[in-house]
Image 1 (cartoon, one colour):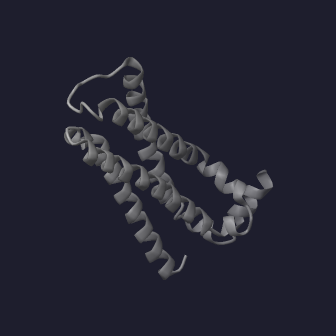
Image 2 (cartoon, helix red, strand yellow):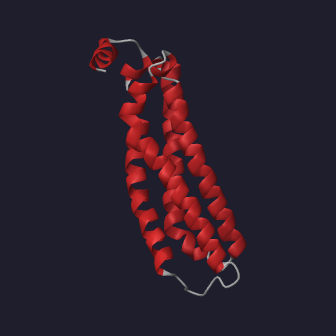
Length: 162
């Protein structure tokens, strides 16, 4: 990877970490905005947009690799399968939780009414969030490995194994 590619990669990793930090903050502090339904809805929409943007940035990093451009998508998929699955599952869980939360608390935002199923979804979403943060950050750092950006003996070994 050349110097300009390195600067671009650094900027993308910084943006990815910023999106992760925003998601952590929304998950942690959104309850403070619950008395203002419109503000909470706006916050949730921005959070969901940022999650989709984070997945898009990760995919852009994949598309920029030599392995992807050479048509060896399977090598990337094998190495980053869990991260991609967790990203999609986390986005689905977050959107589901946000829709459900807003439908319960839209007209009476200060009433604390959580059903067992809502509490279960909340707990699952927060648990998956922790795994998502770890695997997403690991993938965003691992995709910067120079082996992914040039033809090498490592790639030939991986092809011989499959």
